[in-house]
Image (cartoon, rainbow, N blue to C red; front, side):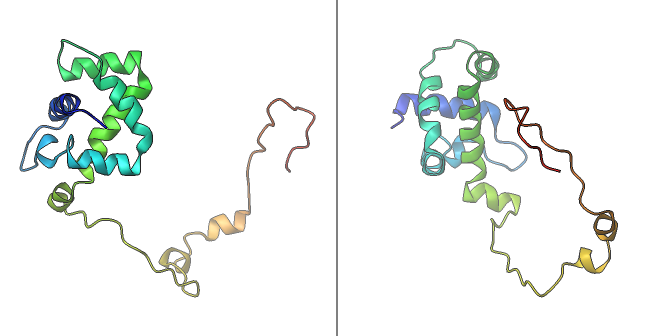
Amino acid sequence: MIPSTSRARLADIADELIPAAEGMPSASQVGVAQQQLEVVFASRPDLVEPLQRVLAVSFGGSAVEFLEALAQTDPPGHEALVLTILGGYYTSEHVAGLLGYPGQGATVVVPDVYPWYVDEGLLDVVLERGPIYRPTPVEGNEDAPRPG
């Protein structure tokens, strides 16, 4: 899907964005351009095409200069590149472990038990006030009925 030359370029760009520092690994050390790339693509297959496109662009400057230029010339490509790097880095089990992030877990909701903020009366003012909102204008049809 992504050729090895593009993966090497991705690793270089990723390491300039996320270098190893203060006990944390660099982006390439956790496999942002290897196994983590597959994790990102499994969740966001829409990133494959823009990532392939931006990695095919030749640029002689640093990765930071490339990203700055890309933000101006191809904002969707810039977003795909940055999201791929950050997503790959922070979904790494090694990084999550170093950050002390256990991952998302299920929360059991018991409908008969009120949350603490309801019992303490923190929402009483809102409940006494009642619902308030601003009507949303209907674009293109000013004669349409509006809520309220």
